[in-house]
Image 1 (tube, one colour):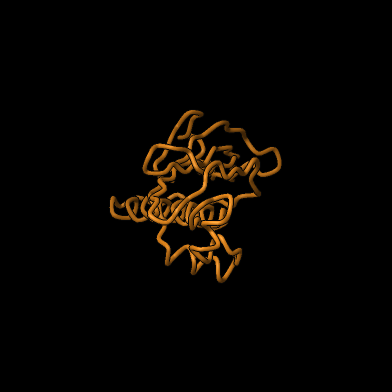
Image 2 (cartoon, one colour):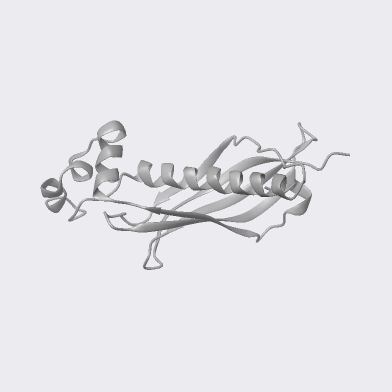
Length: 158
């Protein structure tokens, strides 16, 4: 993680990859999105999707995990270099969530972020606000998932 002043529009960051298996698709669906095309191969074959596919919420949750793990790697790397890690900031929300293509069992989705815009916070001068596009791309290079994220980023201490 970097301080607000160290970021610029256009910066990209690889977050990590997640492999979707029939087992983890069904496990997620049983708990959070029990629609037949996420739970049963036969039902999925008869659906619009044609085969077992992940819940969009599963795709999003996997992406969130990649963000948290990338932040933890950066945090741990700063400590290993003897630096004080930059704290994580909260997110007030997101916009334009899109599930662009189904994610099927056997797919691996790689997540990344691109900073779209940065602005200083008017109400919290110790924070900046970052607007970024988070996207997921499958192993064939097809974009399957995206949204626009908003996050508070700490400013450098004075």
